[in-house]
Image (cartoon, rainbow, N blue to C red; front, top):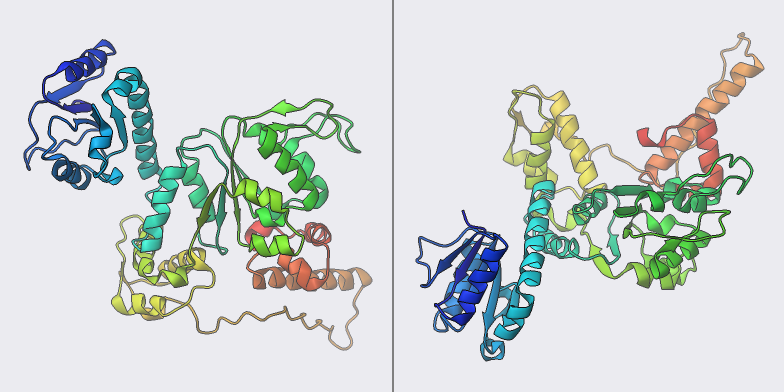
Length: 445
């Protein structure tokens, strides 16, 4: 099948287009008449002469959009201003005949790039599930964002899928580096992001490239950017302004080409007001802004999401369905943990039901789920009367209780170490150090 369809009467311009495309071996089919209802093209690119079919432009271009939604449409005319009444939604690019003769190949190359980007987006992000208006608009925004190189700021509650959106935006890049800003101790931020030279600080025995340099030529995802300390924010601002980094201890800067995508569950404007986030950095990051709605505000997506997770987690040869009563139970719940919580609920239900239908009793949510505002300190375990307890055993008992207490505190803070540290009155780095000493793996919390 041809990759380009040209709809135009035979004239000097259409013959020029035909000659140019033939000279570069672009396969093209030429149509001198408007297509019939049963013969609409399903090709990547359509070129339409507005002058040739002036009485049918709106009718046919509208039909193209409806019946060939994946096709890109380039329209042209001697004087495009004459057709200003045609909605720009009905075409992807418009040129005058004069401009077309100069920029035809450039514009076609750009449209093909857009087509390939859309194709990759559809293939890789088929799990961006949901039919709500909010999700439809988000998909459109992401599709536009993947073709640009400007910074992106994604905002939304924990568990709404910010990293999935970041992966969609970066789908055109071979490199995608993820940085969890809440998991890096303050003192190591500069070294982690920008690297260091040998001898830059005690223990720096070799040169080390940072995550930004690793992402050069690709994209970097700065998750929980609201947790980035102020001194690192200054360094990041320089990267955004000058597209260069300077490793810790180095005398020279390095130029980098990195697409920056940031995400946060915090209200950055409130963080700015409280002097915890730089205003100039906020505006540098917020070139392309995306807000992901929490699941409680788009409950019409729950059915699609639940069925999607059932397909993922059901075993080989198994076929589970969701009963209407179970769906209603889930739709009545507010999902404070958002999509991540829904995924866990479905996965747990599939583990503990033997039938092929998930019923309300299989969906363990709501009842018995109590999250205290502050973690309760475990009651010390006392040795039985008459038993001897060595000091080492006593210390081990203390550490076990402390470990349980800290894990429970972090869980009650939805996995946020920063929030847990604030509740406990500790510096975040101090809490990280303590967790490390106690052998706590944050990924398992």
